[in-house]
Image (tube, rainbow, N blue to C red):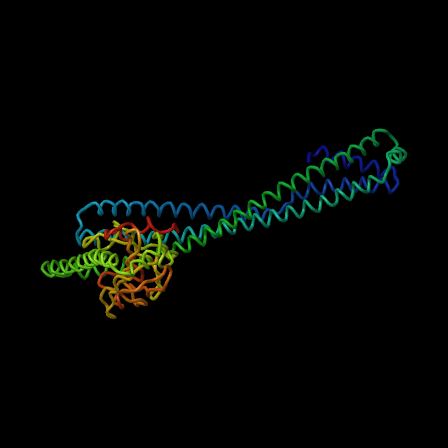
Length: 431
């Protein structure tokens, strides 16, 4: 409100008081003037402490962003080094260098994610303050709106004739009429501001919910990064043991590991072909056909993330072989379900630390392999339905069924098309 309007109101109030008009006319004018002045001072005396808090939080949020940006530059530098090393020859020395960079990068990822969580928390605090401030503003506007409506109703009971008879001049009469019109104008303005404030409040509340979801996602990311760090550190330990061997010992051990993987791969491929041929000649083939087209589902929940992709360039044992599967993070002993109905072609489980797996054959030339299992619930030469429990996950280094090349609890999940490994993610629902 302009100062001239304030002085005009005070001038009229003074003149009216001096002439001692009737209370029926004086009181509404005094109340109207007082309300307008009060509204002006309320706007001027709005608490600044909330604004100061918001500004302080905004400053802290910007500081966090700068810290995150600095960390991101370091992360990008490590990622660049990893990509360079991945293009070099597959050797133990090179794989160790990749792992060293990966571990350093993950440590920075963890630090950066922690900063992002702190930043999200500050933004949540900021939004909460803004919401509280906006709710207080709405409450104040509702109070003013109620008073405006009350005054309008009160003045509607006074006729213009009474106003003219109780004022000494047409000037004072028109001043009174003008201020009544001002009240109506202020009422419309207040209604518009109240509507705008409500819309802004809804937006702020929506932003708050989005920010809370973002914070939860970041916390999940942090857990996955910590699990990834543990797995990479474990892999580094295994590779360092290899690195300490003499050249002759190393070559012999490498040959043994490669031979083991080749035998597993060859066994699975040969077995699938043989089993399919046998099924075609047996009565059981009719039951096999009852399963219909193969539509795979997740054997364990992918909520904890994928620790290694199909032919993953970050796979720690890539110097030995290409990863023919995806590794789905799963706690030791998690229930494994058949990705599709089919025939149990192989259950390789000795109850010791050697690599254990289950192989199922499905329609459409597909088969699935479930590796590092710590327990089995099916037998070779039987049929299973989609979603049926077939075993328990493993992968914890040194545990039953884990084998020599495992760095943490997970399910090794292969999908093969006519015996050849293919990317499982192309056959599974999105997650």
